[in-house]
Image 1 (spheres, rainbow, N blue to C red):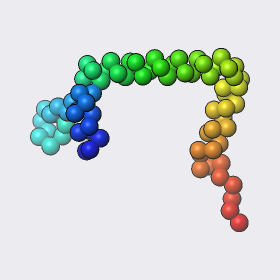
Image 2 (image 1 turned 120 degrees about the vertical axis):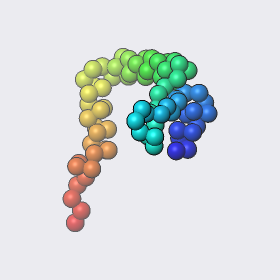
Image 3 (image 1 turned 60 degrees about the vertical axis):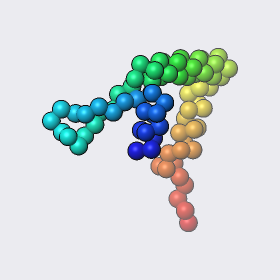
Length: 80
């Protein structure tokens, strides 16, 4: 709940009641939250384009594969 409280405090999201369920609330982005999300998506796309420009598409795929190996527990070697 502290995270949701902070999102509301920053006017990024709003909780609204759900019809027919007095206990539940829906979470929606405010216009300010949607604007921020749009800007962040644009920055992420620019960053991704920069990575591809430096590494090329094959290098990007290789990097993502290696990062996946580092984070996926299925790649952990057996422990003796």
